[in-house]
Image 1: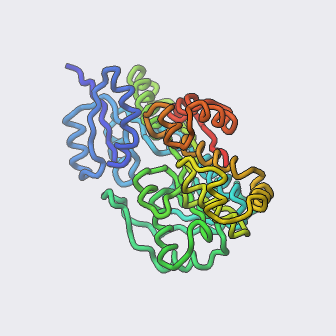
Image 2 (image 1 turned 90 degrees about the vertical axis):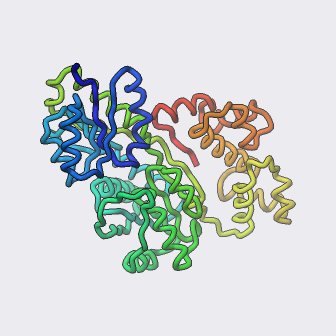
Image 3 (image 1 turned 180 degrees about the vertical axis):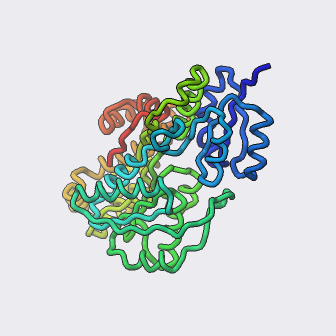
Length: 391
């Protein structure tokens, strides 16, 4: 009987990322078998020869992947931008990731910017786009690349900060917005800041990339990040594999990499920076941020801070061009957006958890701020269509 298998040679983290999208193609009847890419190379070759898969979806690791390509199995390289003439590939649009990070930090009214990354191709691409976008707006960028390290084989993925990184961080002008090439680097940066007494986001605002919920949630304060539609990358990789299997000659065609754009910026506390000179307004915004979903009113803000409503309303209008009430609503809508993108719960429950008294109030305010309905936003965030997150 002819084999119907496609081998997935992936690391643990990319298995979790890509499998949900691959499932959509697997449901059509293809048999997908998973192999851990960190197995010894000889063992990987032996298993592939034994299984005789009709196709291979392969993560790119320089010391392993070229050897597997030599086996002659029709291959799609996933999460790697391959050069023209190489095998078909699907990857994140890292140029767009860098642009989004720059626009997010510029939007915080910062004047100093920096980049932290690993010496990996994707990090260099994100750095180049980040620096170029800053330059287009008249800003410079300080850059630091960590020393080369062995590939991570363990889910912990942590290491101690080195003295050079500490010196670089101390020397940066403050306040500064820093783009970390991926979330573990963002967490490392946050730990360095705590170690030397730098405040986040007051002195250093941080944004990472990939939106790994475990890493972002375990970072203190929680890490802002650029969301990558990993399930879409998995789906497009499997879809491309099916196209090749239907027409074997298509695997030999030179084609540009299929680049999937990032979905959006997910704002969390690490980049919740405002260049606010007024301590009273800063406290008011912090209180609203922490309590907006609890159904607070403008009166609650005024009573808690013991300040004049007129003067506080004047300050926030001058600073943000919105009222205290509008800021409360904005924070509720931001919370609703997060729930819609990541939780499969009814819209009326989203409204309640976001601090809206009725689902109709969610709908009215959501459309006003986002120019779409909550249901439409949920669909766009799940299909990989770019969804802008407005500040």
